[in-house]
Image 1 (cartoon, rainbow, N blue to C red):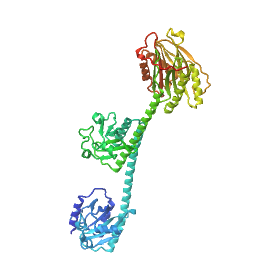
Image 2: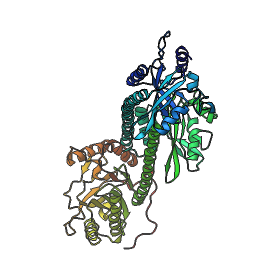
Image 3: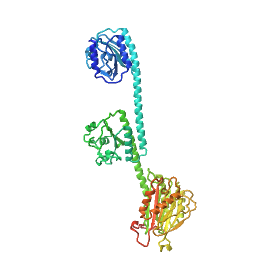
Image 4: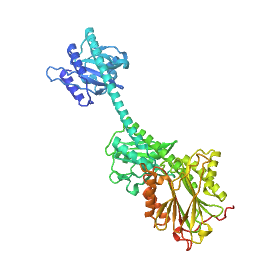
Length: 618
């Protein structure tokens, strides 16, 4: 075969080669081999699995045809000669390939082989790369049989050492490139997960989580949409969590999908395995009855559907939707699976928080018993927690009847505003309530007994409170007047709303908090209450604000109470809270008593009169 024909055939083979960068040094080295050994062409071939990849070649030297560059990346079957060099790690020279052992047994009859290229003489030396051993062959070819002299083999061997060095540098460079790519991927993943962990830190509900994940997925992953679906208690439906402004969830028909094979998210819920679709066509082929990108809630291409598990059970599915096709590499999958794990953990925290909040609210409601409604006295109470976690605190209100028929009013504040504070408050409240119905006595005496009991029972807390008794001495009964007798243990002063709209601050000197000194002196105060008046007790959460002194804050409350005086009692409390509770740093309790005139029927707005069925014995 002529060198012209070899050049033509090499040119033909390069039409199908894989593209990629080729080190210039190896190209130059093959030219040196070609010129020093006076052969038509030299090649550098590297192992790629069980095949050879031509990494570099010299132009074919022909007398009449322009040089033709073989290029790089074309994959061929390993010839028997190259296989032998790789297996032995020794140079091999073949003077005539047509008569060499192995040529006629079919080793050279597949694909583009030495026979196909018209090579009749072969000389190859091993190329090594450090610990990897033999990784390829430096080859010299001729179109005519020739005798390869020991000197030529030695030259090729020495040039093979240079080629091995170049390959070693290339390998180091490739490893550095891979390391940089891995580091960049790890950094990107870390940034994504850091952004997600920060976004999820303050989430408390599934809606919070869905909004946070949607935002992070859009900003860091380029996701067009994010669907968070929760498996319902029947495990038959996957219900999507609403995200404000999410165009895919505005139509009620897309509120849920069935758990099962009909929808990719439903399939992930039932199998517990993530599914990855590079484009919409692949998804529609697997799930033909699911959302069509042209008619469904959103247009899409690539999607990922990731099960969210806790304690071995799938509790939901996170679906990421992209508007362009993409290949799901191992690194990309790992990143999305980590995102799903973070989301599942956040959902578990939200579930635990909801259960804790429910238990705490049950506890709080148990502390806020139904208020009595004796005769023409109307009572109303409100409680607003400050803790976003427990939704309970140490504030409370209470009212009950004493043995002599007097109505007792209580407002109190145990230090703290969490479940622990609520538990201690329950102890203090129960003791005070028990003492209040145990006997007829002045409020100061009852509070003093409470203070002693707290010390004896090792109730290690402090509390402020107001305990009042609504009495009606015989001389005052004829005029409809009542009397409030109260004691104040370090609490904000009660307010008296007169029938004409004036507000009187009952700012008698308060006494020491309970829990500090059981023998602290305590006294009672009294004020006459005309018909139509209202007494308001409250905790400091209603009035305390940063930068505002207590007297100024109480005066502001008195002004607002005067402005709302014409309202029915229930409406009055609601309006007070609407105006004053936003921005409160503490929980709030309010107890109000309205003294309706006794010379007329109890007004309908006050509701029916309710008192205990059996009087408490003295």
